Image (cartoon, rainbow, N blue to C red; front, side, top):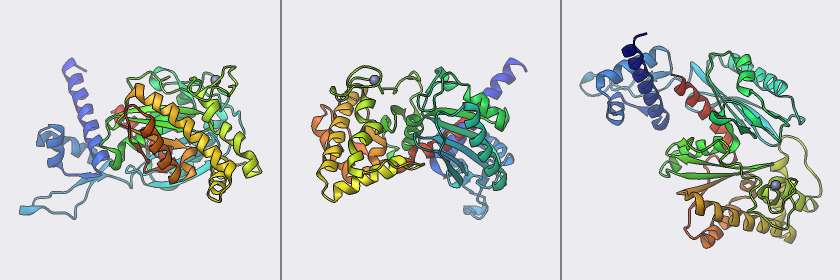
Length: 390
Ligand SMILES: [Zn+2]
């Protein structure tokens, strides 16, 4: 390839990616608007779109005929031909989800693994099920997205550690590629980033260019968005704040220090404080949900211990987020994980107190996806992986 044709092919890939991102963000869009929005000529939009129509990633709605008899057909994703595979590994369950390119779920299955689990075994199980879903859907796989409770090397190429799964350094992408084939683009992030990505792209939140997402489960994490993308200029370790000493100083963390955020407001701590209220320890894939909802119901019924536990969590969360947001300066905050299961009153109260305690108040927004934001995020990671591979 000559230098000129290489550079032309780079431009072409870049423009194809721009078109797919525009379709992703608009749902359905006309060629004319694409040209205006992307600053491309009509001719080059037509050429690029023709290419995407030929491989079947886009379709045009032939039923719409514009004025003067010329076709003014909006373009949208071809939801019949291709699919995206998502794997979302949460603290108490792992979901495998197959979605159409527009995000509509075609199939899903939930697993509970006995931990620790060998990475090879994990990949074999979830991708085995995913592969079967793809076959049954009659579609081809365009890309895969994986969200894990883990830390990653720079560039999110390998997992460096997952305390939850008992993993050290693991080349998860290689394990998944071996199952799906090396041609399939795959992207991998932590749960917080997957959730933040979904939230940032939801039309209701699209006006906020800088959203701080705070995720609470068995572990904690946060992520920051930039426009409708993740702020990937931050190091991969950004957001791994489990052992920041911003929590309750009277609580001893297993790392040997006092006041770690995880030890103070992680689900394990909340459960420890509220087991006597619920009276039993739930097991299975909805452990966190069952337990949290039981505490919320007890509080609603007037159980003072449950009300106190929720109040304690609220206060600690406010103090952590008031500090973090004064440093990070987000335009909005979203929360994910078990606190959402405490109901809308929790978020309302939390938001009110955060406003009172923050030097620069930041709106707390409810994710339209609720606690499913990271699950939705896996499909977006998959589509991004494909677009980035062009
Ligand atoms: Zn600690």
